[in-house]
Length: 213
Image (cartoon, rainbow, N blue to C red; front, side, top):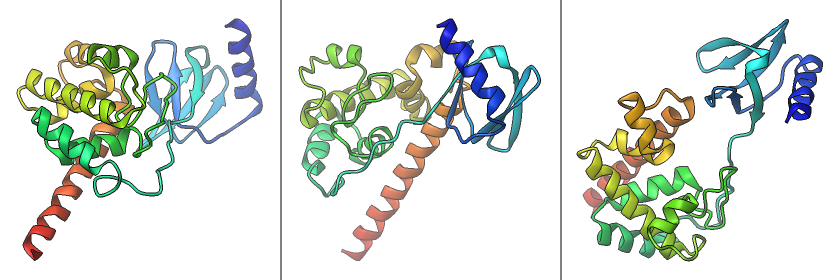
């Protein structure tokens, strides 16, 4: 660990600025950044709307954002359309919401694995998959059914508050309770905005289609 930190510190000294996605701080917080540069014993992190400075000793790593390439055909009209509709109906959640979460989580890649070992279309953590008796998290039917079930639980837990449910899906219910709302993590705020924007777009398109019909 000490060797890794020394290597990272050396990188900061030799590279004045670099493209990055997440700065991991010793406190455990992850900040979404567009770049960084060393200034003495401090590191200036470029974030949306400005910059922040942290001690170089508190910056543990810079990690790339998880990126999953989309399959050739995406849901809900693609190969996962029926799976999404069936899971949404079975668990009493909006199928557009399920699709929007999948889009944000895995970009409809059923084999997606994140750095945190979240798996499949709805990026189930191993403990979540086990709780919903998922034997194969890469199986789209099992994965989406468990993810939709979990979404319903979170919506019920937060009395239908979609923003809090999405924040909990991303950062965990404990974080939402700890901070009394959406946790102050750039990743979580960006995730919630991305899903809600995707959901709104899907509903607009559906409304246009219904009006044409």
